[in-house]
Length: 48
Image 1: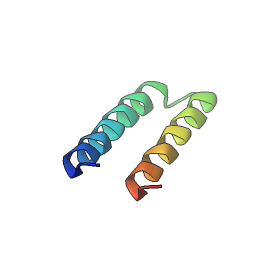
Image 2 (image 1 turned 90 degrees about the vertical axis):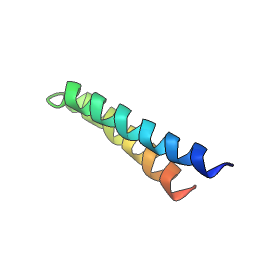
Image 3 (image 1 turned 60 degrees about the horizontal axis):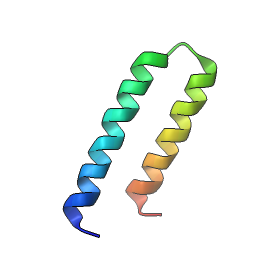
């Protein structure tokens, strides 16, 4: 895996997560979706 590829993936996760969170802040179900996406992001960042 190229280093640059991993970095751009990380940036994409951050953008998508922030956009999603901004739109669904008040919904409990959607909050769980956001937390799921955040876990995926953290796993990707850790290289799991």
